Length: 128
Image (cartoon, rainbow, N blue to C red; front, side):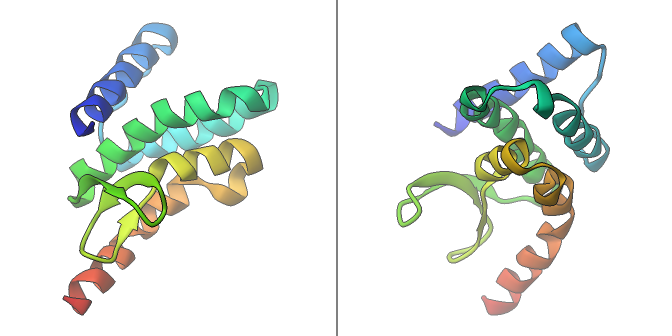
């Protein structure tokens, strides 16, 4: 499954390049752009499109988290969802976060989520 998320993320990069002329990388600046992009497009979207878009953009956000902070894709059975695992008890859930930004706007910013992750990772390492 994890290799599928990488392929989906690469597809997002390719689509953004082809359709919008934007060159996404796996870095904070690209997350900043994507955060703004989500806020720009969400007023025109139907709620029924959120899940598919959250899966695609969430795969890209997840791959950017891994490239920037480490971690790995893993399934969290208690939550019944895939996310990025940083330790035994800690994870980040990019699909959920993208969905929440699509649904609720800037208050659920993926950029805020992305920039606060080092604190979660540091706390996880301190507990180990």
